[in-house]
Image (cartoon, rainbow, N blue to C red; front, side, top):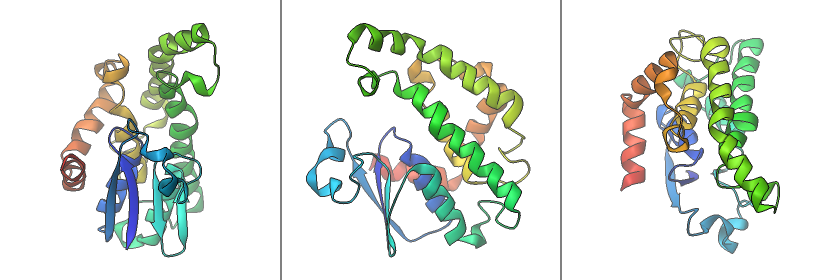
Length: 206
């Protein structure tokens, strides 16, 4: 059985949703980043990066959300969670997820984790103030240029949609009104109505 290490409010939500959409047999292991679970020796033995998520498979441990999402899509092809038949289209999915990971997530991380980049409290405060502006720029690009509609890649729901829904969920807490992105706001509303999403949210709240 697959085992996903997941924390409330983290990007691991995307992987949990993808696994549920794929109807995979998996165990959801709840972690608390506030309590420092990701730095405990037993978890570091699984993921030395001290980050969440981590997916334990029969072949080993996978980390990094884009990699886990690609694995789920390829391991459960009947779920049709990515355009696996088309190398270019699959690369486009990977490009979208990589942008969320390398740019959008980093913009969000500047809010509370400026210490990763500097130990200067003044610089950390400046990074925190910049978060809403940086996120607005990211989601304006997604809304206007990257989001094909009605789903990220067009007509077919994919792993990209689970990931976009996850990072969109961070915006209100970062002081960004999602109403300024009507297409993406509608996307989040529709994602929240999917049975798989409802089930995962219920599981993590249990």
